[in-house]
Length: 428
Ligand code: GDP
Ligand code: IMO
Ligand code: MG
Image 1 (cartoon, rainbow, N blue to C red):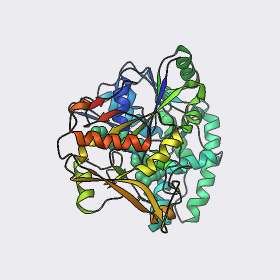
Image 2: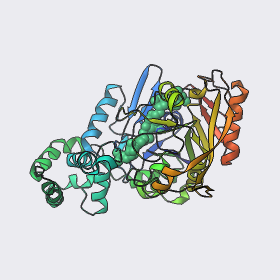
Image 3: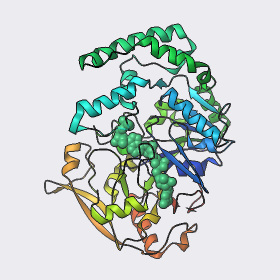
Image 4: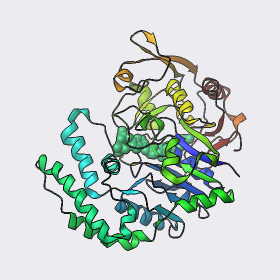
């Protein structure tokens, strides 16, 4: 049996997963998303074309690759159809090669409304800074056993009944805060209008994955978000509501650990975070500004400016261990080209003591003092370089520093947003 791969962001998302999945998909038969929803924004740049994928796996750009949206994903059917339209406009065919798991739960229009109400009107200054795409509220309903699976579109009577039950529960909340109650009939009828279109994509994806596995066809699992946004292992409550970590693959797509999945951890050469929550190595002033402007660090989904800071190796070590990472793809090294000195965080101090383990408690993370080492900047151009030995020596030193600390090899280095701007250090 051949190897399968997982591409997982090891920080707070936006590490460059989209670019790397696109790059690797050339040789991949099947790409699978296993968690999250259209809160993700995965950018692929090919020459002068820019494609941002939210819900659909980035493998879709290669016409020979099949794509699955797994049961662990929450699917806004309207956002799904919109994304399909956009891809079709780019000349990318979707029918017959994109499969939506019948067991995935829906994000319905009221989920995004409730997401926004909780953020704006209830949490107030304790905001999570969500994307307001309804991700949390939809996963809540799934765990509460009142969610609506895509498979309910097979049986309109069942859908109608379940929707009524769910809407009754939502109305208790909405009425309680003085909002207009929802009408389940209206939601039902609107869904029925797009039902036929959705049914073209809804499938039993379990046998598709299992067949690929049995035939030894390589499968690539595309993580969304990042390890530190995982609902269990991330910086709760400032997290998303899914499992971007490796375990999410097993529950979110329908495959077991015998699939021999090699874990590729995507690491940005510095750190970014969108939304609220602790960020121990957050930079300030000129440094943060350079990272944001040069790195074009604005959310691919919401357009919000991303917070920027130094590479946090202490947090990364946690992510590496947690996911059994086999190799690292280091992205956006070119953004550090102009820095005289580059800081790297190698540990945290809390109340005067050096911590042994990464703390997930947000109140501890808010207070830790990062222990920094300083690496000399290369002050030279790495943008667009495609061979390792053409990198400035000091840039190579930075990469070696990361490998030595994490004890995981860096197998790909990304030196620009385009597919071509890549150094393959070691073929997988
Ligand atoms: P994802 O969510 O992990 O797929 O990452 P995003 O697409 O949200 O953000 C990464 C951004 O960096 C995108 O705009 C990419 O086009 C861009 N990018 C990816 N790799 C590189 C790189 O090596 N250098 C530069 N300059 N940009 C990159
Ligand atoms: P990709 O796949 C970066 C963040 C939000 C917020 C928190 C919860 O492009 O890396 P949610 O809407 O999920 O309930 O918001 O998670 N977040 C992301 N940050 N990249 C993402 O996806 C993200 N998806 C969610 O900003 O802090
Ligand atoms: Mg993104």
